[in-house]
Image (cartoon, rainbow, N blue to C red; front, side, top):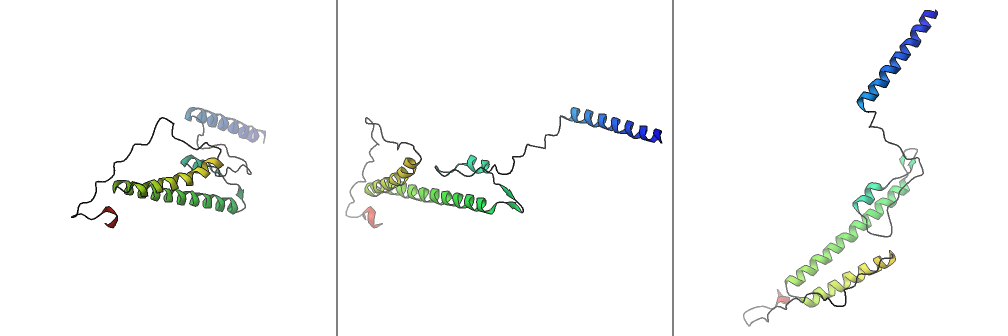
Amino acid sequence: MSQLLLFIVVALVVGTIVFGVTVLLSGGDSGLTPVEPDGQSVPLPGDRPLGEDDIARTRFDTAWRGYRMAQVDQALQRAAYDIGYKGELIGVLEAEVAALREGRIEDADALRAAREAAIAPAQAAAGKPVAEEPAGEKEPEVAEAPPATADEEPAESR
């Protein structure tokens, strides 16, 4: 009986040595990463527009059947709002560019003023100063379209 017990102990020691050498030669188990403990959620920022890194850093608390639904719903609503806001901003910028290309300077100026007014409260709430032009620099003037001749339609009626 003592020989069987000695054999089992020797087998365990040899197995442990073989396992240790294998781990040392293979460089360890890089597949395991430290897990953050529950309660360490990282929500999306609410004081500025979202960026790609914000989505990647977002973490949720775990619950019995997965993530806490309230946290996930809040993050999805925030991301949907930000995507919608950026979509509207792109639409306004495209309309401003189209107005400039068509020579409708007044329309482009009105769109630019509305865009800057919409961005200013968001920057003020985030504590960032609103970007103003330096006193010595002005935006380049866009030349107005030449007056329409009798054969051409005015740009507004096209």
